[in-house]
Picture 1 (cartoon, one colour):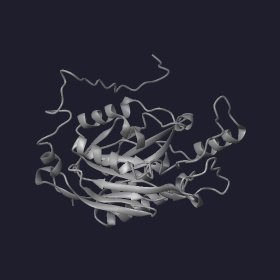
Picture 2 (picture 1 turned 30 degrees about the vertical axis):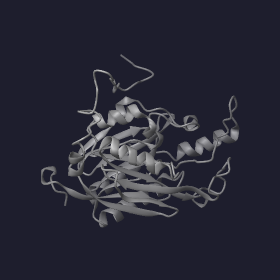
Picture 3 (picture 1 turned 135 degrees about the vertical axis):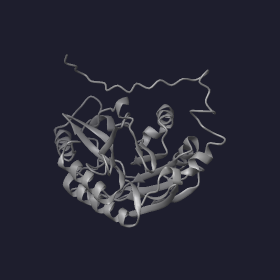
Picture 4 (picture 1 turned 135 degrees about the horizontal axis):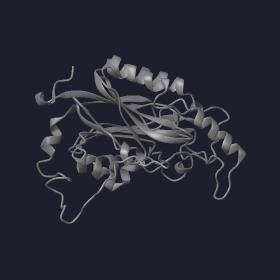
Length: 315
């Protein structure tokens, strides 16, 4: 049972570190629901899943797209990848909404979203009372991700109000965009969720910095996945740094004080749990608020465009 914010709530948060089932949205949805059930059974009322958990993260693949060229093999790879994506109005999301409601758990789930003929790396935010409370599309796909994913816009910088505080998500290397972070702080974010595919040891420093900068709890979720999780004919066009391990994990939970509450954990599937004290954030703002008493709006100004950007408009 979650207490009201006025009662200085304590609650359990879970970060899921597990392998997706690439290109198989139904099986990935099954696994997501199973893990959601497991986290709720352990008392968690908030769960964060990794980037691209449903749809898959095709690390090491080039989709046959060297500069100035495209290959037929690459086009067929993209066809399979697109078939493994899901739509916000599709049956997989409906099942996730039901699982969130049945478990009374707020969930952030990384998906590959298909909208028309474009794919997006999206963080789906689920509220057990209202269903889909937000769907943040990654603003800036990194490097060759831009071959396979479209760009989100400012209309999906979503945060959701919950009894646990204001929850929002920033995906992977979006966390290296200072202005995006500032926009999230200005949105009043209390629980900063960071689904990622970055499994480097250096990621922990980024997450700790954000916790201190935003005076916010940070929940970072990365997959632990090996080549065995991918179809036998899936091409790894580049040698992976950790052999048969595609992503090593490194998930963690950090308090607004910079204290690491759980993780980082590498080289195994696991669920990390931590007790969250929502009032720590308020106490942490005594000496720092990047969008309040520690800002200088007379010197610096950030303007965020939040209207949807459409390529075609019909009157």
